[in-house]
Image (cartoon, rainbow, N blue to C red):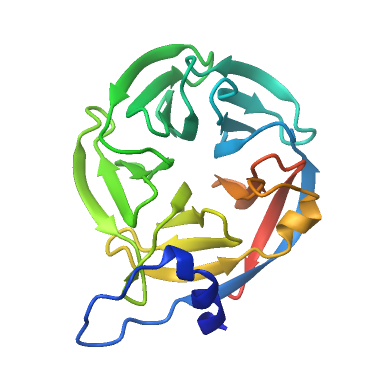
Length: 256
């Protein structure tokens, strides 16, 4: 099974580095759907988090990029604010009483008040921004390459980085991120797979196969891909959705 998944991920994998011993194979995990909820099919989902009983969602595309507070039960947008004009919104996370969002190719991110969604400040970073999460100590940024950067939340300076690998092969196209129970979950863009990554080494511990969810969502179009992971730590609930998906799913992982 892992060989099949590696073949399907081939477009995202680089050549392996030489190693004294073959790296351990990641586990292959499945899922069951526990519940499904309505989701705004016009939302080009780039980032998703759970906070204070609701979802915070960032959406993309120039002229359509927003930050939203969304009620899970019916998908209603309770609050919404536009990202500054001309920018393509990407991932979002929270840090204390703020939200931190990034943009794709503009090297610009924003801090927002987590309650009012009022913009409080901005910051710069080199390269692209794809996904962002936090581990309680640092922010973690993906940029479409195999690298994950760890950033000081106060200064946004890079403190370290890891290269994400599957059996020694670096993985490209890491997109939306979520920190769950000591590991980093990452969507692989244009695939049905989420990777569970060791934040210390970058090694992929598990490949989560979410095949079939897109069809269950009734999503169409080549860009309506899986993208959006949120975790309710207190309730132990894992939510996933995709770009322009009319459904949000609460899922349980199996085989992990």
